[in-house]
Length: 458
Image (cartoon, rainbow, N blue to C red):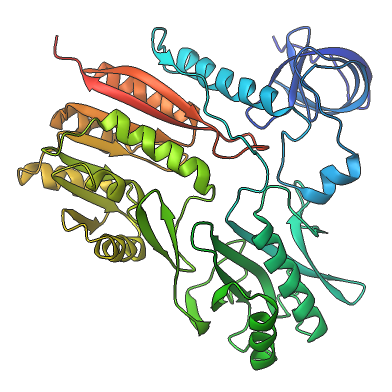
């Protein structure tokens, strides 16, 4: 017998929000039926309009608040659209931290069935605005001028943005300056529907410790109109620029970067530091976007690894060697593996840059390379994983269980897959000692965690 949905589309109802989704929407229940409503906060009473209904849940729109949460911060609706990407900006920062910490605790209990794990208070930022060191913004045209900003939710309509409140000021300045120059020089924006035009995206990267700026112009065409004039004006107006790069993406795709990259002016890379470790960052390099909190995150990973200088460490999903090189300062040997060959070349270059001869890197899938190392006798005392949002591959988790490193340090950007994987490792003989949430992305719903596991040798 089908259960009837207790609400209908376009109906107005009074609700009390009980929770937040992992996307930051308020959750209200009508006879047990969940309604997800953007901008609603737990504890608030409100009138909502039902927008869409499904068999198991529906969506609503906030119409009027009767009682407000003490964590609510008033933001003009025009600003909400203008700045974009900040799903939680209507929540005070203390409220955001509480929400994220609760999210970690909830999934560890519900998904991981981990009742007795110590979850420390989340490590937040003193200044939770203007922290991102990278932007890649889509470009369009309106009223004969270039616009650049972000896409409206669930659409490909670009909202022109003068400033992002979560980008570093140098990034905002670079994007705006390049938009103005390209508009004045008549460089046409890419038209998604017709697959015509030139400029698709503007990317900017900034080394917070070095003050070095890179700009990347991503175009549909191999030819960049007014190239010499464009370079001359960028160099004149952005004195911190050290690298101007042209990337060509000629495909009909939502993927931002194409396969062809050429340095137009200056260096192929810019540099930055995390702690004492120096990194070379190219247009294609993966590099954490919040340098302040990256140091906090990696310091905690190093603490959980608890290295004496005699250990062999394996770093799965090593990227350009960021965590690997932090660990190499304290370990006997570090072996890093990463599926992207270009990232491995970056990692080798970064090891050389820092004079760390005890770090070696291999390209390939972690779930293939690490079992091979294990068979060759390269077992780890400490194994570090920092997987993508989907979590660790099952084969890798099984290899960890078989290899039995004394410690596992799990860095995660998705609490749900973290909880799932911790459960598998616990069932395989490990004990999760503690979990430290870190707020890497204030004003957004994302939360990172570092977890320490030890081999349970009972």
